[in-house]
Image 1 (cartoon, rainbow, N blue to C red):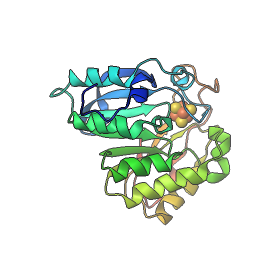
Image 2: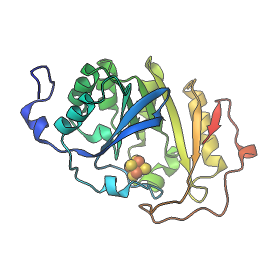
Image 3: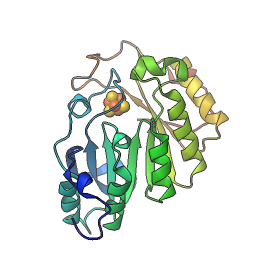
Image 4: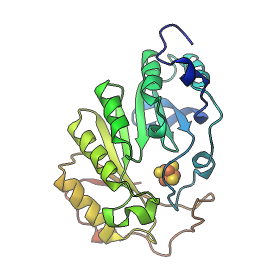
Length: 235
Ligand code: SF4
């Protein structure tokens, strides 16, 4: 690693990365990007189709990723930190500093359960965009994610709302797990917190094996029953 790197020897020797998607025109709004998939996640969403990543211990080093990115300067504009859950990796700030020093913008995909890491990234000006999953209203958060840390998620949401960066809130909906009243609780909460962006609702589509082994729901969300003054976009 170069003398200018933020990585210490311990970080250089870790292999927290599951894999790299070398090119994407879809994952970072208005930017051609590479996606870095962090191994491991602190949630177990039934509809998750990334089980290989969630249960992986990682196989690629940060140095491997940075060397790859050096070959993409001038071709790609951004890097997406995704997973799994990237904020579970303790060296994320140092890694993001090295990515930023190579001239790439950074997008973070997160479930929001590590507000301290999000704050550290924001404080150092390392995030250009963030996509925050609003998994479920508080009452259903554990049922959907098998994680009890709704309060941490809420803190991340507030941090991002208070920040200057562009970010989006999104929910994956499997109608057997979440219904219209759940979505209305989420939109009310977003309104109460003065969220000004677009709220993205993405429908669960069964195309690969999921963690919970669930199949397509019998019903889909009835959009006419959704109440929101926050702008909604369906994906
Ligand atoms: S869908 Fe859930 S389990 Fe899968 S990576 Fe995202 S937060 Fe983790």
